[in-house]
Amino acid sequence: MQNKEDKLLPRFSAILRRKGLTPQAIHVLQGLIYDHYYRNPRILPWRKTRNPYRILVSELMLQQTQAERVLTKYKLFITSFPDFSSLAVAPLIDILKVWQGLGYNRRAIALQKIARTVMEGHAGRLPDSREDLLKLPGIGRYTASAILTFIHNKPDVFIETNIRRVFIHFFFEGRENIADAEIMSLIEKTLDTANPREWYYALMDYGVMLKKKGENPNRKSAHYQRQTPFHGSNRQLRGMILKTLIKNPGISKKRLAEKLDLAPEKIEENLSLLLKEGFLKKKGKLFSID
Image 1 (cartoon, one colour):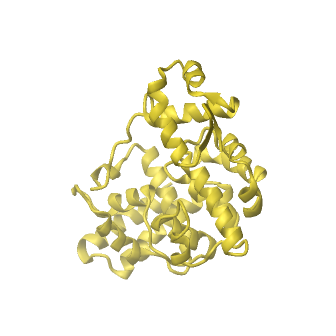
Image 2: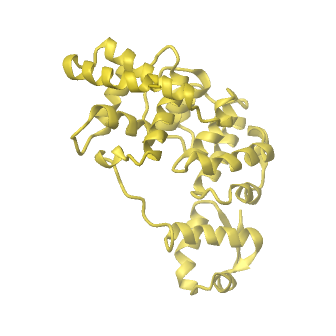
């Protein structure tokens, strides 16, 4: 039996080819995307809440990390640090213990800095204006827009990798080097302003479906970059250093190098960076997590 998507896709393509992006074409596109979403929704806990803290945590965790990897850590993090006040006063070592396995540990520090700013400067409430959100550490244009949309259902315009994949798939056949500015214009024109929260969920799920089918339209993006290999990278080494320090607080550089089976000079630069970024403290010759 032919599903609704099979019927709507040729119709959308025909309208777009003959008339361009008319209101009718937008209506058909929205029907096509929503049809897939309602038949195949991803069940994610942060989609079931309007709690600003929980949505903030999910957004920072999802930066450069797939939802499947975030799921387990998100639940553990929320259980361990259920609100801004508990996260603000938690020892960094406890936060990093829970964060272990997600990578990009700067996000954990950013989350705690946000929690402290919210408690000290906003009476425990996450700001609800773009201007104030952008002042918080770890929050850029995308994250601010996502927070406004997913907490408050505000019709904001933003792009991320799955959304980009959808629009390149539908609108840029035969094109290369596609700028996000072109895509953002289309996102704005096709936005379901009555229910932006659900619309963005639907777009993201459609993008995930395209990837699972083996399609990667994002290669045509002007902003596409292959991810550098993790194995042997400084990112891997930094993670190894933090993991070792969690288990062995107050350890010398020499002893740390022995445990990692590396020359001390190999880890010296990363220790300096971790100190500078606020992960570590040094007392004499001994390093520990701040």
